[in-house]
Length: 136
Length: 72
Image 1 (spheres, rainbow over the protein chains, first blue to last red):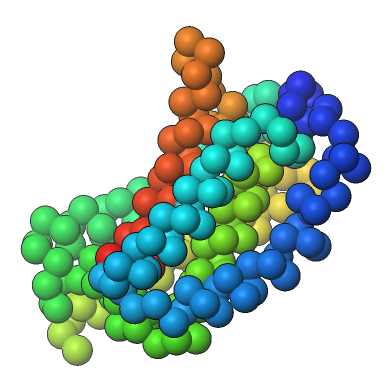
Image 2: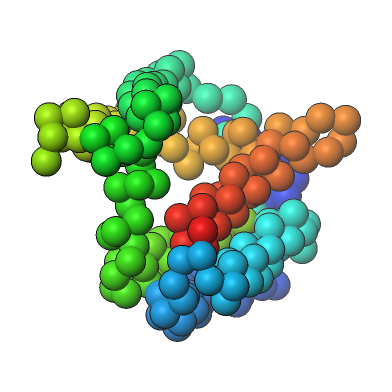
């Protein structure tokens, strides 16, 4: 596994970019996000602000990035298994009109994400994964 | 709950379980399966004409996912 040039950025120059620093920041952001109901202007603006900031940070070359592999191991095809199962089920339910009898993942998630705890947790997971992508 | 709805939920659960299983297999010592993080990292390194298309695509996809589930 070779180290790409971007991974050579000195991690000590951005100590705040470490997960130990950023994850606690995401907790209050998630708790606030959980308060904002779906389809509201506030929720749209909030996601736009957080997501937009993450995309800008991710496209910036100023943040240190973790080393990435230059080529993948031969077993990469195994990843097609969960992807294929998901795509088949999602496309089928979408084709059936995403009804109560044939719900897409979005339709199944909506009632769960209506609850504050699940919504705040979803925000936290989304932000943590986003930060992991930014650092990749 | 209808049979079709139960089967659909089972399908989604199966895809989640398959994802967890492949990730678990990838993290075993000496595994020949890359982790999901490595696969995503390689996709993010894809450039086209100097433009980081892979990186932009992955970041925008995650942005859209958050908007789709949390804002709309």
